Every structure is written in structure tokens, then in C-alpha cells.
Image (cartoon, rainbow, N blue to C red; front, side, top):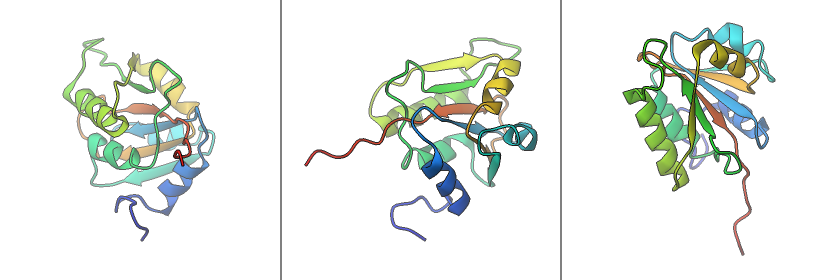
Length: 151
């Protein structure tokens, strides 16, 4: 175990988060997402599973270590509901609130049509699959820059 690392973040996820560079995208997927197939097409080819964690709990822990990109308008994206495009579902609102809290600022977001989301996810760095059971609980998080603290 390490100090100040959320207890559910193991070595595989630590490697993924540490290996990502500025502008790389982390895919956070629900339990219905084709995680193995998409992960095989990502930059790292890695799939990390987080059993027992929903999307918002996973994001809260991940964002303790990973900054979101402040140089883009929308460092957060999610799969847009097919039957109600443009609707912000409760799972989306919870993850957005977790991002705003972690960053201490407003966070821009962009819903992405389902098939376009799969294509964007395949271009990501890695896939983290949660146990999120709510539909459309799939997200893209764009990594920001870690700035040195002022002396």
C-alpha cells in the first residue's frame, strides 16, 4: 500500500495513470461496455477492472491522482443516450460533480453519440471498467498537466 492513494487503485491502474501524458484520454466504462475489445485497440492495450465501484466513486478516486486538462473546453465526455440525446442522466451529473469538486473549477463536457464514443474510446490510452450498472455510464477523461507547486 502507498500513502494517499485510494485503496482501490492498484498497481495496474497506477501504471496507467502514471504512464499517461498530457492530453491522453482515459476511458472509464460501465459494466456493459465492450471493454476487452476496445481496450485491445487503445494506445496501451490495457484494461483495468474496478469491481464493486460505480462511475462516480471511481472518478473521485482517480481524480485524487490525475488532473483534468485545463487547456481544452471539454476534458470530460460521456456516451450520449441513444433514446434521449442531450439528456444529462443522473450518472452523468454525479461524475460531472465529482470532476468539479476534484478540480475546484467548472468543467466543460461533451456528450458523444454512442458509435462515435466507441471510436473515440479506441483512441484512448487505456480502459478502466467499473461495475456501474446504470446505462450510459461511460466517460472519457482527458489528462491535464501536473504543475510544480510554487516555492
